[in-house]
Image (cartoon, rainbow, N blue to C red; front, side, top):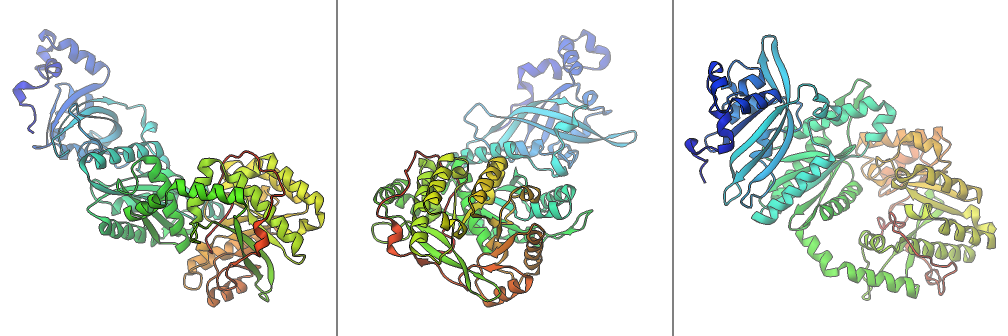
Length: 598
């Protein structure tokens, strides 16, 4: 399509564009419209993207404080004036706009700064730009019309946190939603990635909050520098960057995400407080082939990122269409039936992995891990099972069942000490703790042989409720461990408020310990922190002798992983012939079980 010919220009703009010289304006029919626009600090434009020419209303130069509008008469000239601190600009919103023109155009409403010449070098004029762009049959924008209002007194609305010129969560998710609409309509392919700074909280606590913001800003600049025109990035949350790339196929997506992850993982930043090296892990999902909605994309990208974290810093995992088809083939309904059957028939089973003392490799305790198998005996990924359990409100029922199995094992095996994971939801529900107290009233001698593991995520959801839970469990004589510690969620200040006994250091820091000095220093720092709080430490995912030696030299108290002992099935009686506690109604929470070592 071609832009509207100049002589047929939009009628409602004609009074403005027809205004003549200043001396003649009072006599012109459009003078009142011109006066009103200028009084409210607005001007209008039409941008022909095929020729790159911008036609302005006659008051444009006055609005921008310019002697003439010549510097802004092309898209390229206008873009050259955009302040680098802006979150976005018109070129991004229109040429790379994520939307579908169904015949009425695609609206945009953006804020940015313009660095314009003045008598004293340059000044920044902040503007709000609202308009509509029109696309051809292939979705390519060819025309944009809009209104610009100056916002000289409102720069705070534009400047992002940390000076990182990227949109925040709400704006980015709108862009992701637009990407999905484009992908569905034009059958195009994109990859959505979530890049996490896994040690951001540690950087903040070792240095200060300013260092955290410096690292975020520096990483945002490094990411922006690695992107192509049309790629979209933004903050999902503190320490988490979202990224959307247009790709031709899955191999190209793998290459692009791998390249960006490697670039960011190799960054070393000099903050005012000292040097900092971000630990980066990336999860990604193909859209729309693997994820067809924003919610599904966020769910799958976080699942992929968990897999990347298990591989260690600098790794990425992409959820592809093939994996989605496998998931759909199995089906959530099938998993739900298996879970329901296992709960009602008492066929959920536990495996136990030893946690050994580093000094002599003797077993200190065993962690209970839950297993779910289908009718053919195939192990179901617990990530899928937990997601279904949460959506159906089954997590508390599972937590009750695990409690019963643990007490049954401890009553039968007098020399055994067990740990088990508990969902965040159950820590806040009095029913689970009440049943736990009843079990200990029947067998008080078991208290010092029980360790309850809670995840870091539960701490950020409700720190006060978790503190109350930990205090109650400790008064009963049991120990409490924080699982996957160091993954980037917990404030060390909050840790001081919790009377826990053990920190289990996240396995992503352990897997490459022998070959990565950065990981070794970070583990040492976590161990020293634990020592300062009189806490014991467990290193998870110890997979080789070299790592075990390093950890022992660092003073880590306990080791857990394939090198020191693989998970083994609990005796058959641990499946329970009948439940001990009543199974109440449930609300979902974060997984109470972990199949990482299975």
